[in-house]
Image 1 (cartoon, one colour):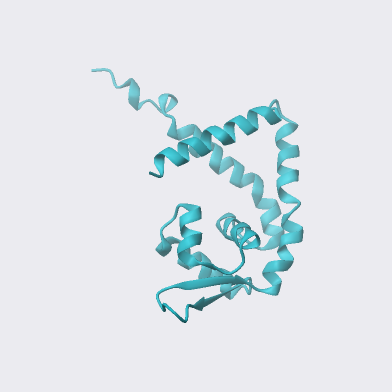
Image 2: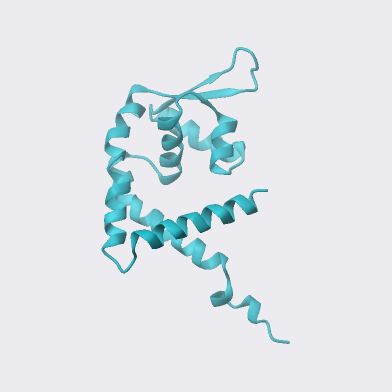
Length: 146
């Protein structure tokens, strides 16, 4: 019996996994300057867009469980980037708000996407290809998230 479906080269998941890891590696020098990790950067982007948001909403946007996001938030709070506050109406609900330090990082972080795009465009990739790739990945995420 041939198991060609089990060959790594025939898997959809591997190039997505490898590309994700390699892209995150490209972010590292920028994030080190901000003293944050990639998962923290994702949380910060959500908060820069919508300050004071429930932990459950952050987890939903990142497609993570709250028990996965909680240690990330705890470390961010220790770094002075965010404050977590229990809701007065429902103590099970926790809201996350940026501190002044968290807000200040936004200006420096705003340079990251352009720098990464410029790096990618110095390769054989074209803007249109990157846009199509992002759209295809978003469609895949949408389908798999149901």
